[in-house]
Length: 291
Image (cartoon, rainbow, N blue to C red; front, top):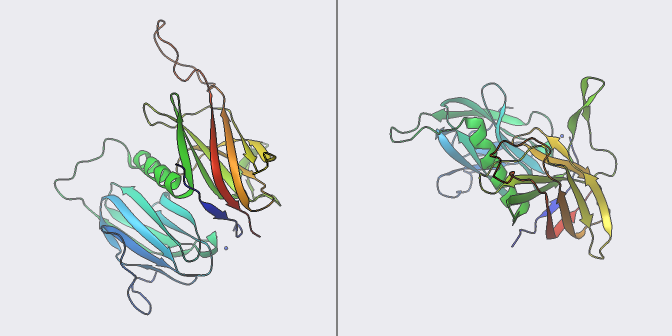
């Protein structure tokens, strides 16, 4: 059964980190996780130190604005993030951090600007810890992907494909124009950013070069919007586009994946891998555009 998330578009766009709680300590989080209490003016962590490895954060939004939470590396790159934390709700995030050192946390009330930042220290893992076999960024992208599917989407298996979707508020991106990258803000009327992630079920790898289109169908069977998807560089590679949803309701997402356009190695007597596309239908997806 797929999750039935409700997504709200509250707008795109918008001091050091308070390390001690204001008016009392943050509420206790799940065992082993770092609790974060986010408000419109503060970002309070129950602990600012953790050992290298998977670091779980539990973020509770006690403010009046939708917020985000980020963990940045020393070079400013995003290690992990969780978006669209509505007021009065909590979201979890697990960051795969393999290297000890100084990091930065940030809450972003209003989902804009640099946010409310503070220092976070990652210490060396215990002697029994085993170094990961893959680079930190590779491990992190799949951890973040699985968490976002759990929190804001769903998935299904079709033949050799595992197809996942994630729905968020409409997002900006950089697009090439005349040899230069230009920042594109969501156009008027765009309400949701719908992502489709095609995964090879046997290996767990995100599949490139897949032509994908999505229809958003309302409860009467009418197509509310349909788009071809673009390929995006982000914390994890994915296909997506911004959609315009006219009113709140329960919708069905129909995703059509054509055969990947890449060339394939293989033996002459073996069938080519992922030679055929797939179609996936996700029902009972609640969309609630606002603003």
